Amino acid sequence: MGDVADKLAYFQAITGLEDADLCTEILAAHNWDLELAISSFTTSVNPTTDTPQPNPNNHLPSAPDLQPLPQPPPGLAWKLITLPVSVISGSLGLISGAIGLGLWAAGGVLSYSLGLVGLGSTPSSSSSAPLVSVSAATSEAMDFVAAFEREYGSSGPNFVGEGFMDALQRSRNSFKLLFVYLHSPDHPDTPSFCRSTLCSEIIAAFVNENFVCWGGSIRASEGFKMSNSLKASRFPFCALVMAATNQRIALLQQVEGPKSSEELLVTLQRVLEESSPVLVAARLDAEERRNNMRLREEQDAAYRAALEADQARERQRREEEERLAREAAEAERKRKEEEEARERAAQEAAEKQAALAKIRQEKAESLGEEPEKGPDVTQVMVRFPNGERKGRRFHNTATIQSLYDYVDSLGSLEVDSYILVSNFPIVKYEQDKLALSLKEAGLHPQASLFVELTSLE
Image 1 (cartoon, rainbow, N blue to C red):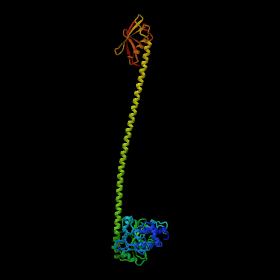
Image 2 (image 1 turned 30 degrees about the vertical axis):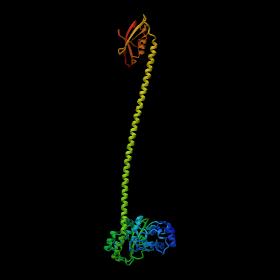
Image 3 (image 1 turned 90 degrees about the horizontal axis):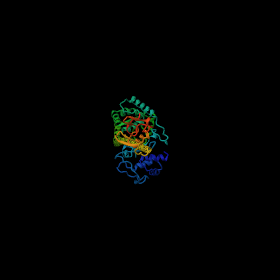
Image 4 (image 1 turned 180 degrees about the vertical axis):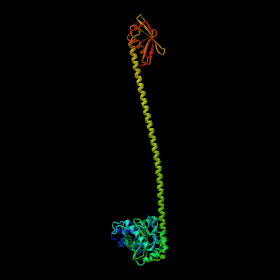
């Protein structure tokens, strides 16, 4: 890798160091030899003791400036091997400290971009083309499973009929390691290994129970690229890998060359035992995340329900307030209308009373002064419907209209429609007699009249 930025990024990914300046200083001290820098850094941690010890022969900064790698369990052996990208191969014990960082693989475990093996996309890499399309990868996997079962029967491992990336995702989802078998049909040890070891009852049962199994022929595109990426130098070839973050995988163990079922079983059991804490921790972490997510969802649902209830109550309160406000406004409007109507009626009544008073005044004035008794003076007595009697003297030349004006000027009647009637004889003095004088009407020298109320037709 000639690109400085790429070397710095991979050095950080492999060592777990986040300080870019510190990583740059370490690489520069080793003349930007990525493998040498990683080797010097990892050997600064003693793999056989519980406490990391600094290497006095390297050029790394002093111990207080470093963040030590997670310490492998006592007795764990691991080594640095050369792959297309510097790859550290070892056991899963180095992974256990990475859970807190949210990674399955960190520190001195093989961790590299799947883009470099054709399983991802890395813009700066010449191998950035996808391995094969999903349909082609699945087709290759299904062809391999069919050919393997035709040749060796169906008693072997249950290889998944899907591409490597799908199998890797399946292992991640099931919290298992991925058992990888790269099949070399032309290798002389392949038939005996498949029949005696891989398809043995004990290996098949152990692998099927504890791992997700993926196999590929090196004659096929995906199998060939995986053999190059995993540096398969001898066949038969098996490997145990696990998914890591950012499209990375961790190589935990590889088994090369012919092995007996007992030898392979011991290796698988050891790796599985060493990986158990990480897998269990990952499973518990996932369960905790699911539980936390479910709790958050329940809390969110409860909050939304409470919020909706509050909003419903608030809407009801606002609607009730609006209803009361409308009713109050309507009541106020009616009150104002009634008050205005009363005021108008009172004003009209007052105006009417004023008009009547004015008319009475005018009619009283039109009568003139009451004359003294004399031969030409007529005494008139008027009886009202309520029994009240009123009398006045008039000149005998005064008209019947003068009698009506007199009655109107008294204001004793609440109605306008009435007629004056004489008792003996009964004569009604209506419109046609208003111009007659008292003498002409036969009312002189005295007359007694009563008021007869009439209704307007």
